[in-house]
Each structure stands twice: as C-alpha cells, then as structure tokens.
Length: 154
Ligand code: DQA
Image (cartoon, rainbow, N blue to C red):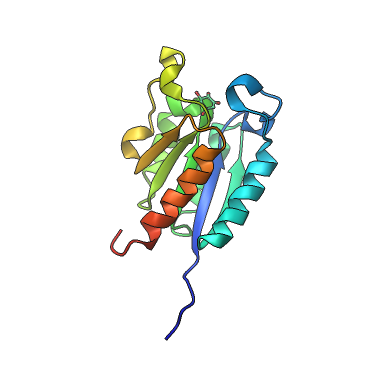
C-alpha cells in the first residue's frame, strides 16, 4: 500500500501594502512581517501536505498576471487582496478563471471597520473567508484549505 500523502500546490497572494506589514498600522495589522508569515505558511504547509508558493504585489496588473500564469498549476488559492478586495472587478474576474477552492483572508475584521471595507468583491466567489484573526487568518485559512483538498470529491 502507498502511504505517501499527495502534496497539493497552493498559491498565496498578498495584495498592496502587505509588503509593509510590521511597519504599517501595527495597531490594526500587528507586528509580524510578511516574510515571517510566508515562512510560517510554508512550514505549516509541509506538515499538512501543502506546497505553498507566495506572491505579493502592489499592482493589480501583476496580481492578475500571477493568477493567469498559475492556471491549472495549483489546487487552491489563498488571497488577501488588501484594498483591491473592495475595488477590483478585474481581480475578481481573474479569480473566476480558476475552478479550484479560493479562501479569502484578512488580518483585520473588515466588517468592524469603515463601511467602504464592508463590501468584498471576492467573498461570493470564495469557498470561505477568514477576517479578523490577525496572522492566524492565514494559518487557519491554510488549514481549512488542507481539509477541503483532502476531502474526497471536494
Ligand atoms: C486587509 C483589509 C483591507 O481593507 C485593507 O485595505 C488591507 C488589509 C486586511 O488584511 O485586514 O490592506 O485586507
């Protein structure tokens, strides 16, 4: 019997200004740097059968490019589109190219903040959303992704 677990490729996309985590409004976004989040995601991924690739850009066009480039190469997508969450039909459309599970992530609870953050253009095409758990939103999101990918017929 082959007991080897199948590894799934999951792409984690971080949108604008998330490269400034640690320096950016730490009272809202915390003190952890993006590099540390990415390292932790890769480490966690290894323990739950997920090979994590990460991508950050401040540019809508580059995020759309990454989504197009990875078509049919990935089993799941975790995305914190940051401010583009609330504005970008173009990123929504590029996400819709994919048929794999999409998990939307936010460090802060977007529903507790300004009303312009209450609308997500991704929420209704995502499998689920984690918002308000700080860096744990990413880690819980990755664990949820592993559950989805390891459930037969998901
Ligand atoms: C964010 C919330 C967005 O409203 C904001 O524009 C961000 C970060 C979050 O992770 O809490 O840049 O996505």
